[in-house]
Figure 1 (cartoon, rainbow, N blue to C red):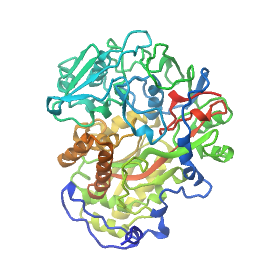
Figure 2: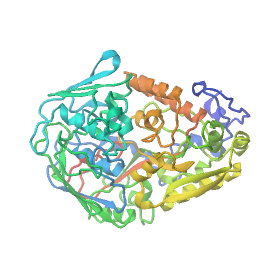
Figure 3: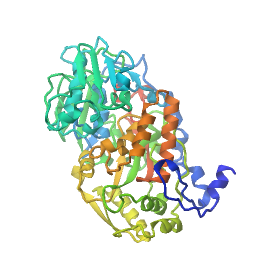
Figure 4: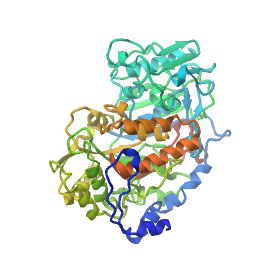
Length: 579
């Protein structure tokens, strides 16, 4: 039977009870109009041009003959998500975009367009880590030639300090759980020690020992929290933005809600492209729309915003005015996934996969999706992620209420739920629409908007707080690295409950499966394993209800040389250059 025939067949299959690995099948309804076959299109014919031309962006990239010098001007809207520029605290995509220019990590992803940007490579390390001690000890050698912006050499102690700052309870880092498997981490996190006994730095050699066979160590060493920091950088829960940095650039001034100044690190000893003299970041744009208009007027060179900001209230919109992937407006499939997270630590959803699957079936993703700036999805990995497998799990064109009601029958428990969302008009509209759709199953959902001023990192922290009384939460998940570990492991491993595991989901079987996939040494085998896990997870346990994947849209001024526009998928600021 062909895939199209399977897609259009009506079925009465009811998923049986079973373990996570059993891979049960959720029944599907006919997809009117073949919407599933068109999942990569954007809907409106004119806007559909964005993805039709998206592949052309990969032809652009940093140039060796690029002009050197000039200040790149950035505009961020008020409340746009700059939570911190301290590597131990930064938790939002707008902050990571800036932090990436100042950061030196042991491992990193190249300043190249996708798919090359998926290839993890050594940066400060001389090569991949040496593994010993039965697979529990990792040793990195720091390459000579790197120096902080104050001229001091970068040694292994810079990375040991990064680890211990993240683990310190006084730092209150949202990434602390990511390093909880390091030997001695428990003592640091409990305040009994200042440094983890499993982290040793001697000259250029960093040794990290783990309490069990670890997963994705090299991937974790590429996260923003592993930026090299001065060994004397203090613990500060407010965060340190201005300190000696070891990447191509350094922050010279940070005035929250006002401006950020970033300038070259004249002692940088690496090979990352860096053409401009620095970045002036204005944090005072009154709104996302005004931010886009300042770029259109060439008063700013770039600004970080999600794709819908470029399509609301702009006449004509930039893509119509300047074309796509030519000089100023660029688009490609993105990596930000919109999810409804189900709180598995609360009575409604705990040990209740039937209700979670029922809500997935009841969703009208066509009505909830971000329209021309998003691609509907029923899975958790972005479609552009290598290894992604279309599991054809839930209907995308509309709900399957008959099947949803059958699964929900007897499993709605109290019949009441609280849904958190940020106090942002489009987010509230999405949450309200989902509430109305879930009412068809007899579930009474109360939508509680969280004030916009604590959105982003603080919103995630609120969701991760044990005992917080929410059952469903609308979340935009955009990890700082393009790796499936940053989606599936970070969101679902038991170790990360209270950190990046926002829904408190806990499954020993899933933990083992995810860690096994993360340890696979061959990239293709690893990607294939994650793709299979993703589809099976959505079908069986359904810890979330995925809505869509936002396309990555980049708009620049006429000062920016398009030959240096590197999308991976957001704009690589380190690689930009001016005409």
